[in-house]
Image (tube, rainbow, N blue to C red; front, side, top):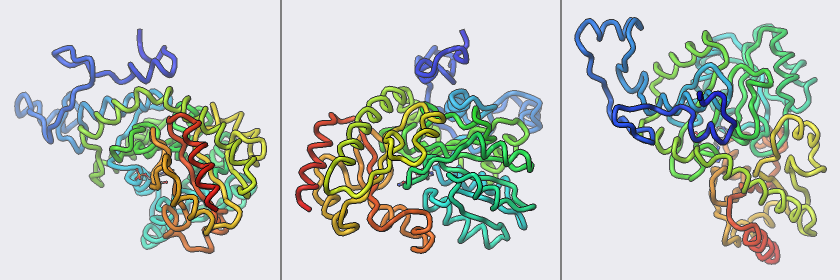
Length: 393
Ligand code: LCS
């Protein structure tokens, strides 16, 4: 039976399996930089693409290929490309699809550096960019120019939790011949599959849910169409931001439990969001599973579940937020997200601190916003921890 016929959790276990000569039950780590050719003729044929065979690990490696193929299968794409980090995935997409005189339209509240590298660096090479609230489709329509080549969406957005209608945005972009790329880091393919909704490219910081154990950084891109895939893959190889085989092994291992980890952290997050929303010291909570979320209905339609990322603000703004962050004992005060451990951080002074204050405020990243990545601990412990820290305010 092909793993393509299996359901999602079974695919996590069986997709992309590499059959080695010893019958290894797991994907072996091919920790090599280069591969031996059978003879000179075989070497030249490998380079010409006329023979099967690995050449050099920056180009491809069996361990990394196993990961790429399994993520491609989970996202229902043509094929995958693993990268050294999530940011390497982001910059590879920009480099492959944009150039001097071209324009990108993007969600304003994206992960800080995904926007920073465009506004501070790609702009030096003549790439134009417009950042809007893509949660309102009208803003996307208005931002499109004749030279727009890419619509870049992050949904839910980091850290505002705003949701963009991927299906409708893809329809609009395709009418104008614009490609659509979606950062699916907050959901993973377990909760959202952008290619099925019409997007052309989906990508991840594997550092987060897919690996899930806060022990590696990594990225992946999955492309729907073969021609675009080849363009993006070639760019990754040229930029040299390949994933190391050991890193790929760690992700393959972590990924097996993606479904059960998300089920558990999401179950916790639903209870925590409810607790926070009812707490007298909390000003507001943004969580796609709460009826108060502005795109609650869209989230229900587009995502398989609300996930386990929560943003909230304490009454008293940043000063009160700092007391909370300094007093939690179960939650860890650290950036990153999507791991088995609960993390708390402050975007305005941490992950999004390089973003100009004005852009931050326009994007809804207020100084008082606290971001909470819910882990798989016992929910009573996380709520008890929040309760005692909130009592310190
Ligand atoms: N996309 C999203 C949505 C992210 O949250 C991150 C990292 C990246 C891309 C980049 O991935 P990386 O290169 O770090 O693997 N987000 C982080 C965050 O919110 N806190 O620390 C890193």
